Length: 149
Ligand SMILES: [Zn+2]
Image 1 (cartoon, helix red, strand yellow):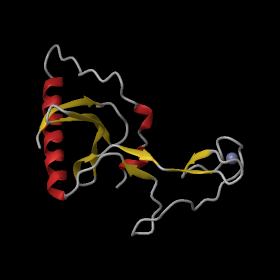
Image 2: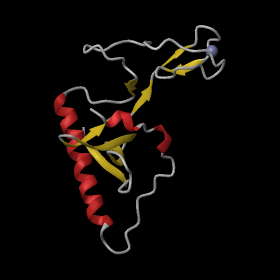
Image 3: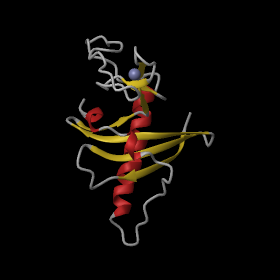
Image 4: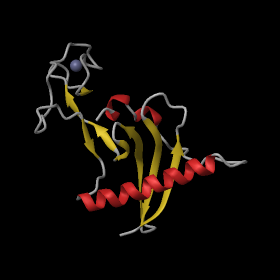
């Protein structure tokens, strides 16, 4: 497997730890979008695309994010401790949409994306720099709390 293209959208003025969005193309065949470059306590790392986990309101059946305290549809208060727990006893709020199978794959993706990220930063300092176009990015899908790991 090879990553044949990496696109990076820098977010230099972003207030929290999110530094960039990225997409990777695998073997000129498949694109995975919505990877994130995050500046963590131990340096830069890559977060894979993920989605919020939801459950249904016991009163009306409406769908709510596990962190919601009130139902979006009927307004009733929801139980605080919902959802499945991980090995460390924390509630799982997100599920990966795409992720590497093992550490070697993770390192491979991370190295390629971080390399592209550094090159993009270099390019961004050149005269006449035009940011890569990411018309379809959903900035709203990012929650700062996710970066705190
Ligand atoms: Zn409800």
